[in-house]
Amino acid sequence: MDQSLTEPERKTLLHLARQAIEHAVKGLPPPPIDPSGLTPALRATGASFVTLTEKGALRGCVGALEPYQPLAEDVLEHAIAAALQDYRFPPVGPAELPRIAIEISRLTVPQPLDYTTPEDLLARLRPGLDGVILRDGSHRATFLPQVWEKIPDKPGFLDQLCAKMGVHHDLWRHKHLEVLLYQVEEFHE
Image (cartoon, rainbow, N blue to C red; front, side, top):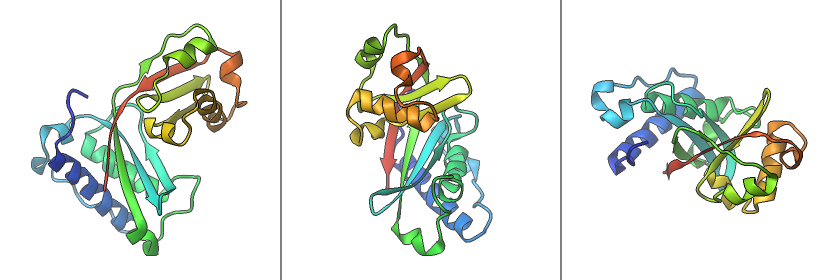
């Protein structure tokens, strides 16, 4: 991510996400995206997470860690998935739409973190700045940097991330895991 999105670009992505969710919840196909009306930054390949909340509580969050499609299309796809396909929640219903708030996180490309010991890993984490990906074989999980607001304790953060990954919560203390870090540009309605 070379530079931040402009305010109009952010508003365009939020508008696209809102329209996509409204269409999907009503069983309609997603609205078409006219690439000629998008800036180069919105047409460029990008990775995003779309987080939905209802009265401040998580209602859905889906995204991609690696860029593979234009950013505008990535946001549209993940907005629909957050509303209808987050396995942790039932699909968003039409009556909920007015209460749903949208947050978009545009990700940098994840970078491997070299560390030697669990203490070294803790020392290298930057709460509030780093999104963290843990990998152990076929198990993988991530927390966006915003999760630090709810889990500011580094050991607790890694414990919960291991649990999310489906392994014992303190595996990071006993086994050298693959760790990748990324940052986000976050904006919301």
